[in-house]
Amino acid sequence: MKGHGTGGGSEPIVYIDHSRIREDSIDELKAGIQRLVDFIDAREPQLIMYGFHIDEDAASMTVVAVHPNSASLERHMEVGGAEFRKLAHLVTLTAIECYGRPSNRALQQMRQKAEALGDGGAVVFIERFAGFTHPQSEA
Image (tube, rainbow, N blue to C red; front, side):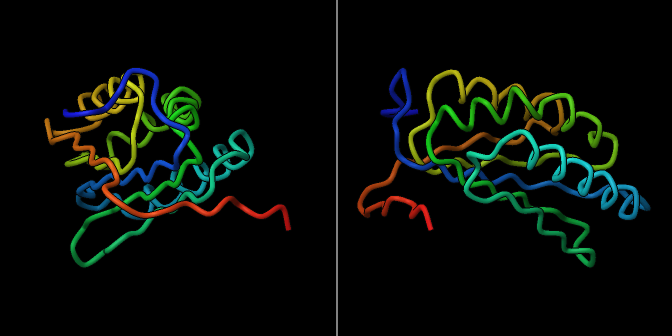
C-alpha cells in the first residue's frame, strides 16, 4: 500500500472491477446494469467515463470508470452503494484495480465493496509512475 497518501490527489483515477456472472442471470444482469447506468448518469455528472463490458462466453463482466479525482470516486461509492448491492445476487466480484492516487477513504470504500459483493478478491491500487493528464475541454 505504498504511497497512497491521506487525502488523495487531484489527478484522474481509473477504477476497474472484475466479476463472474452467475449462471442463468445474464438477462436480469443486463436490465439491472441499464438501471444502474441511468441512475449514476443522472447523479454523477463529474464522471468522465463509466462502462460495463460483458463477455457472455466467459461469463465475466468488467466495469471501467474514469474519475476526475479521488473525491469523485468517493462520491461514486456513496451514491452507488445501495444500487451496486441490488446486483450482488447476479455476480461475484473477483477483483478491484485502481490506477491513480485514491484517498484512504476511497480505499476503505473499495475494500467494503469487495467484501460485500465479492469472494474476498484483492483490491489493488497502482500509482502512476510517469505520464500526463490533459485538462478536459469545455467544448
